[in-house]
Length: 391
Ligand SMILES: Cc1cc2nc3c(=O)[nH]c(=O)nc-3n(C[C@H](O)[C@H](O)[C@H](O)COP(=O)(O)OP(=O)(O)OC[C@H]3O[C@@H](n4cnc5c(N)ncnc54)[C@H](O)[C@@H]3O)c2cc1C
Image (tube, rainbow, N blue to C red; front, side):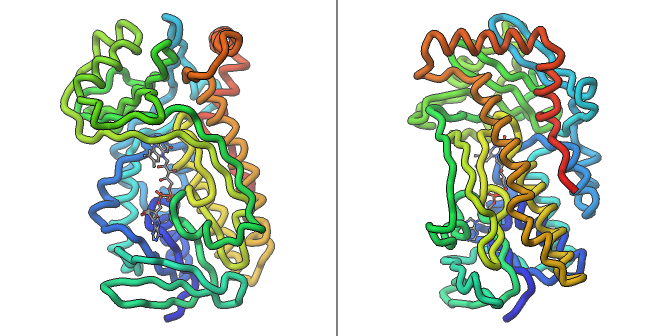
């Protein structure tokens, strides 16, 4: 079997890339180790930059998103008994959209099912071969049989724990990493959101975030220790702790209910460079991870796909290699700015266990500066709504 582009991973990056390439007449096959049901139910991100919405719209997978999303023109920060609203629309000229990643996953899967894209689910032991040859190969097992697929290019869209990045020899890849000394405990519930915008809370007991997936479905997060056990967190304990960290009026208005999902995610900043090795290109979480504080992970994955699809389409339409050659550098320039912002937002809003009294006072001063400075709020807003993509 020979196809033009083999895509490893059917998360948002892999499925979106397949969609753009298929629309351009480029033949793809997607290999995914999980089942479709698992992918449809995976709860993750929920905040989309306008650039992400525009791109999903361009490739015809945003009809439901545009009907069901919530548009947020601002975001709130609560600290030291105060609340500051960052006017995203007023300061940066753009709003953000709330729409769950699981919904995007479903929309992409439905579009592919309609178009007849080759997606091989439950592909086991995927391995990559001949990456610097003109015809690299992907091998996998399914139903006890080993299959091999030859292709022109491989797109590694298989997330942080995937095999694609691991297939690049150690001596040609550099990694940059910051592991944070805490995690996020998330709870999803069919309850009315406590506020019509997101609230980021910096509290002495730790960070909290009030976010949502719809007008009737809320997502809340608590900063917890990196070694916390989910079994120790009953719903009651979660709600009690959240109320302690929220501003008083929000705590009073908080609607609680049984959790639909509860999970703990460690926080990490990570970048692998370069994003290309021979005929393999990395995109999305396979190449970089951000702490979710800045809501950038999914948006970065979509931006990578935008650059990569443009480069591959230019190659197939006119034999151009300048865009594939520039892919890594072009993506990384924007990835590092999002890394900086996500790291900064995390430092601003979380309580670091090892912070010295000096560092705590400096953090409080930074929040106070943000409260009083339109310039500081504009910097936050500009990054939060998403930096422009280079042409
Ligand atoms: C628990 C959690 C919570 C998050 N919350 C937020 C948030 O609130 N806001 C935000 O912006 N971002 C958040 N993120 C980040 C965001 O969800 C990711 O950035 C986004 O999913 C990246 O998409 P992707 O397609 O690159 O990778 P993924 O979504 O990870 O998709 C990779 C796919 O590859 C498949 N795969 C892996 N290994 C193999 C293999 N060997 N063979 C075949 N297939 C393989 C996986 O099953 C998966 O389907 C969160 C991430 C996690 C893990």
